[in-house]
Length: 181
Length: 240
Image (cartoon, rainbow over all chains, first blue to last red; front, side):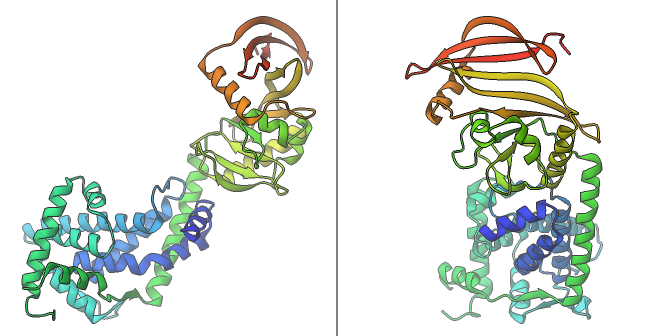
């Protein structure tokens, strides 16, 4: 935490080194979150790129209330949600159908290196509605409280809890037989 | 069916490894630095921080602004000497204002404005103000004086500096010539009283300060321990 405060201070003072350190420190966490939320590593890379570019431009405006990691994860979740929405709209309009499947094969140059476990789980989570997936991932992987997620999405805590429960049930049925007790 | 707890535990403990390769990192970092540099240039040109005034205060006792001037600076002339590149940013105070400490930690400057976020720019302002002060290029706007039980507690001159970029900054400069009488608790009490409303009106008097006639309005306050404080604020009689 103290290290983050120093990094932010240096970043706000104009240090590019601090910005690079922040990127190196948190890029993996952001990528993991985006990849599993979007079920697409290529989109995840774009999201993380956008989050950091926006962050780089915001030095003088940045006023963090919580910690840096939570802030960046929240930015990632927000952008992932927007990306998902626009994708859904495009699919509804008949564009880029069947593109929701993880697109690792689209990038033969492998700009992103991810584990098979992530690919598998990305596919499994991709079978859940986005809203449920998001709550599950933010709660279980990003460590956010239901209240925080509700605030993030501007909806009630009960709705978030409901999505979590439904998501968990659905995941359980998907995984039924796959995992050992 | 697996218990929900198992699923939760499983997701929590997943080892999901993902990383960017070195080329991607280089490309992104290059973009980030470019975006950062661009925003810094835009900020310099368009979003100048709005510094209203600066005050000096003691970093250790954290006394309120004016009293702290007394402790830390000691004499008006010190301000001009100390302001400049020897200051560095130490974070923000309880009110959110950025704090600069001098190299030897004897003096603290607090930029009294929440909007000041560009610390480097603020430091440049301080350096320019130091030079202007040495050249005497500053306008005396106001003189504040406090007497406690008939002894001069502190005296502050408020100067206006016009910087090269057209911005004007009003800075409080001053201090006491000796020990101060009020404890921090009494100082805070006086501040509360002053904030609550004007003290007993003692009328006005005139005095020439730096070649100009100033009209001083005096108010009296009594603190809980019986200390009598007289607060005088002088403004130029010519209204300039």
